[in-house]
Image (cartoon, rainbow, N blue to C red; front, top):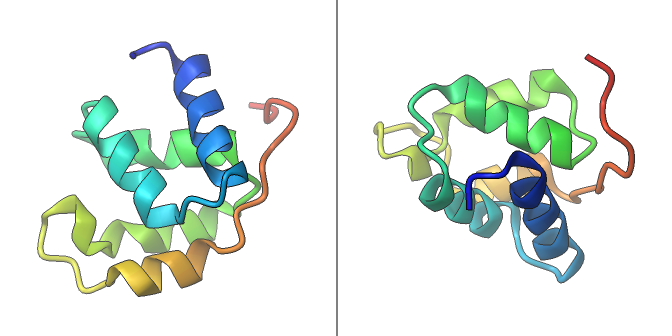
Length: 91
């Protein structure tokens, strides 16, 4: 699955079914080559109403495998509750 719209729709579906931000993020990392942190931020920004400043803080998440200090619980707390974006953001 590499269609951006399908990925965003799946992320939103997961959130509406009660999946945690870490579960959604782990799924996303498995679907898309997140070589640049910007790609990760973009998907979360387009799927959910989250300020960019908050998304930038998630770069320290341990789930990226870069030895970041942000635990799964802290990642979830930072992004919860996820609010689904119903209209595309304006670029």
